[in-house]
Length: 243
Image 1 (cartoon, rainbow, N blue to C red):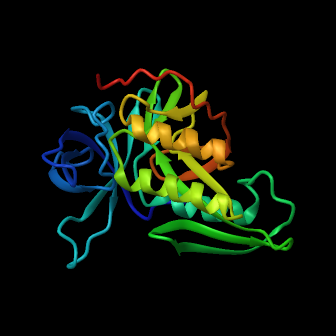
Image 2: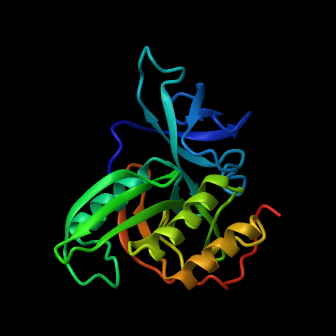
């Protein structure tokens, strides 16, 4: 995935979860930008942090810029919450992302599929008559090489994990796929302290047979692409850099 028109800027402040104020590197102009992630991001959206803005002017938009990535030390972190689903679907189609425990080859894939009261991100079928779901979650929180989800409580995510357990019991192959939106990660885990009931739901899902996968990404200021599978450890400790 490559963004159309990236402008470099420096982060100033985030008055609310939807917008931020940034200073364009080229002109020093202060601009209002749309933040494409409603998570907190306090550990990366720091004053004077280098950020990448995608310039998309339109009369239908309130702002001409989307904040899509931020540099943390020497590493770019993509924070665009709309990117993981596309990367996941494309990655599964082209074989960059492997769904374990399937007997057959995926022959049909559809994005956004209604099951129960949830709309899962991906539905698939194989040539061995297997059917399944993949729920995709973007992971942007990192500390000491550990990636964690969520960075804020998520009632929607909790609901999806519980429904995946139900689907698994009904014979569907069910997966949670974390797209780690940065490259330097040793393990991925659940931020248990942030949302204990989400951790419990993932534990029960695993016990029911739902598979948890994590893939990291190559990221720079203009592009993001799937890199490789990384270990997921539900019991990995995580120190929240915001606390």
